[in-house]
Image 1 (cartoon, rainbow, N blue to C red):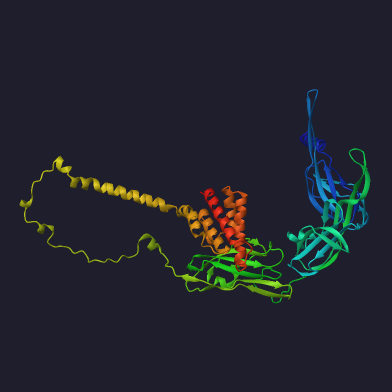
Image 2: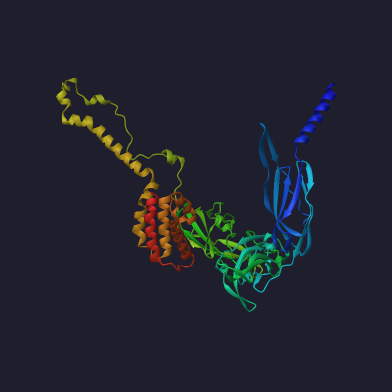
Length: 584
């Protein structure tokens, strides 16, 4: 056999081995139910055999359905058997794709065959026929959608409310709202006291209600017809006669599965006008206002000043951001402003942001108005919300140079120059006969005066060294000294806190001393993780959060608060004592 024949033989042999060991790829599809209602979600699954790495199938041909992927994963199995001492391994490769389908229309619908490609092979699932019925509400079960407005602007918050009216027992509820999955909308959950279950009247009849509230934020303009939402559940459908444990005839509630639709809307989204749009507009749409407070207001040039900026606006404050202060010329002209912006914390109807600024010169007399440009949807025009200027006092500071640090500045002497005595030191002596022989014995060495001269300097040096070491250790860690005095300072000034805002300032100072933080910039978010690391329990953290929330609410409501300052003062005293032990 020549070399060419050998190569051909090996090629054919290797191809035969590969085909013998490779598994044929197959695929089949399945649904959780073939009798469905329009809008009702059902499970659709594609099971692939023979491969663990199939490509994602293309489901664009399923035009009669809303399609949502719910994940997938390997479905392989491996088994080992030993027969007559011979070991064999059986490997079945597989993968599963999971989807959620919702029928768009009623009638006889077909899920067409889906092509699946894996390991270079192509296979197809079988087609599946479904019967989709139109859902309808009943006398005891109704679903309604409410929109805060049917015409809105891009970026404007729209509150969507789904209300389920029911009479009788229900469970296993599953709500489907097509608009919240639309790519042209951002959707947020809106949790508030309006979602609580209530008894209400609809069409002259009394129902129990259950609510779901969402906030829609449109991303693009256009007209969007809202498809009806659907609610599937298991509900009570009259009564039936059954038997109890003892075999007696009893009247029992009868349950069955329901799917009911909602009403529909046509939602129109308008674009934001480009005419008159401010340069620093950052996408705030709605009605906004802001209030700013600064602390401290008497500083040296370059000292940090903490700004607490409270913004009120739309129903949902989570997506609201602070405008970039480092782009406002009236601020950057006189202050150094960092580029980082914190996320902010929500306190009731406003969102608070903390920002640090530093005065650049000593001739600055106020922090100018902070501006927030927004589009007012009620007037259809751009507006600017402004805070009030804040008077401050800035003291000048001397700038230290490298010469100051190393002692290289010129030194000016206060005395006269040393003059040379031309006659030398010899003129002080008149002759050698003035020298007297004074032998020094051991007894003379131990005289008190000589002993003091010998021992005194080392003892004085040792005492001075000990004092310096003690002083250095005491001042080496000023943060530790702050922490040690924190509780004493807090208790001494506690009675002076005449309102909730002053109490919060005092408690902030206590926490700042204990945790080595700046008191004026300390927020609950700053201290929460630090306290958890010190194993502070949840009830104490709740009390800390309450103090911060009450103080911030009092600050931005002009001192009005529903909390009692005496009650909060007592809680703060107990809490400070507890935290002092934990944070030692």
